[in-house]
Amino acid sequence: MKLLLHSALFLSSLIAETTALDFTIFNGQIFTPGFAILDAPQPGTPLGGDTIEVALDVTANGKLQLPPYGDDSPSRINNITIFLYSYDTGRNFTITNGTASTNDVTLGDIMQSESGSTVKHVKWTWPTCLIGDGKPDSADSDRGAYNISIRQNFRLNGEDHYTIFDVPISVTNKIEFTGGNPPCDSVNNPLLTPEEVDAESANSVGVLFAPGDATVIQQSGTSDDDDGIGASKPEANPGDGLGSGTHAIDSTLASCWIYLFSVICLFIL
Ligand SMILES: *[C@@H]1O[C@H](CO)[C@@H](O)[C@H](O)[C@H]1NC(C)=O
Ligand SMILES: *[C@@H]1O[C@H](CO)[C@@H](O)[C@H](O)[C@H]1NC(C)=O
Ligand SMILES: *[C@@H]1O[C@H](CO)[C@@H](O)[C@H](O)[C@H]1NC(C)=O
Ligand SMILES: *[C@@H]1O[C@H](CO)[C@@H](O)[C@H](O)[C@H]1NC(C)=O
Image (cartoon, rainbow, N blue to C red; front, top):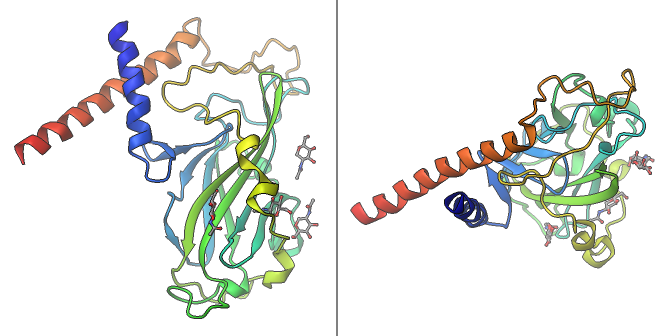
C-alpha cells in the first residue's frame, strides 16, 4: 500500500513535470477544472486550415452520463461556451455561446451536437481577419498568439461551478477564404483584463478526473428515467469506487516503467 501511495505521489509529480505550461496531460488528453477533457488541440499548436477544431470529451472519459440529465441530478454540465481571444491582438471571438447564429458563424449548444457521442468535435470557420499565411506580417495584423478559452458551467456533487480553461495556440498556419468566413466584428466581444476574468478564483475546484483523482460522481438517472436511482449506469458494479483507483494505479505503474526506462537510457547514453 505504501508503495502504491508513493507511486501515486510520483505520478502527480510526473504529470506536472511533463507539461511545459502547467497542464495536466496524460496519454495526450488534457485535464481541465471540469468534466470536459481536451483531446485536441495540444497546447502550443500552430493552427490554420478551413476551421479551428476543438475535440472535447464531455463525460470525463465516460464517468459522467451524456445529457439529458435528471432535473435534480447532483452532477451535470449546464453548458460549455468557447471563445478565442488574444491580449496581443485585442480580439475575443465567440466560437460558441450556446446559441447558434445565422449560418453558424457562431455555434450552438455543443452538448446537443453529435448526439450519443462522448466526444464533441467543435468546428468553427475562422473569421476574415485571420485569413493569411505564416506569422503576423504587420503590427495591426489579427493573426498570432491566441487562447482557446473553454468555459464550463457545471454542477459536481451538488456544487455549482463556472470554470475557465485557457489553451494557448497560434494562428500562424495558412487560412484561406472559404466563402463562409464571418466578418471579425460580427463575432467579437469586449476583452476583459485578467483581473476582471479572475480565472484563479473561478478555478478553485482544481483540475479534475486526471489519473489518481478518486472523485466519485453522484448522479441520478436521465430525465426519461427519473426514478432517481441512477439506473442508467449499466457498467456500474460494486467495485466501482475501487475500480477507478485501481485503473489509475495501473497507469501509474506503466508511467513508472516508462520513466525508469528513460532514466536508464540516460545513463546508457
Ligand atoms: C449556462 O447555465 C447556467 C446555469 O443553468 C445559466 O445561468 C447560464 O445562463 C447558461 N449560459 C448559457 C450561455 O447558456
Ligand atoms: C493566454 O492566457 C494566459 C493565461 O491564461 C495569459 O497569460 C496569456 O497572456 C494569454 N495569451 C494571449 C495571447 O492572450
Ligand atoms: C452569442 O454570440 C453572438 C455573436 O457574438 C451574439 O450575437 C449573441 O448575442 C450571443 N448570444 C448570447 C446568448 O450571448
Ligand atoms: C470574452 O467574451 C466573453 C463573452 O462576452 C466573456 O465571457 C469572456 O470573459 C471574454 N474573455 C476575455 C478574456 O475577456
